[in-house]
Image (spheres, rainbow, N blue to C red):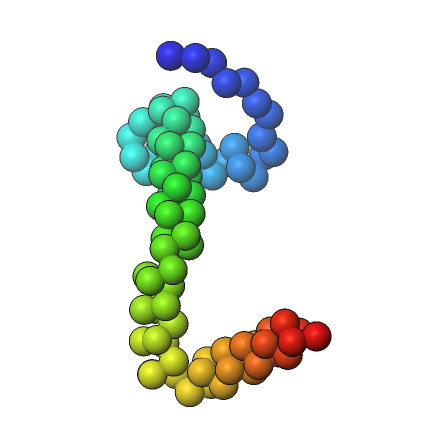
Length: 86
């Protein structure tokens, strides 16, 4: 294992300690888990954002069930297309 030394403000430190307490682990183990979870979440989110078919599917479902979202999306797309024509 490698060491990573960093400073955190008191609020973040307290959150880490509370997470450790709830999970019956040391603050050091809590920090490792939280970093790992954050990086895994970021990688998963990045992968989804790069998957156009997934995004189109989500937008399609959302527009079918949320008229206000569909109107907002339509406005955004119209503005983007107008800018592209310029």
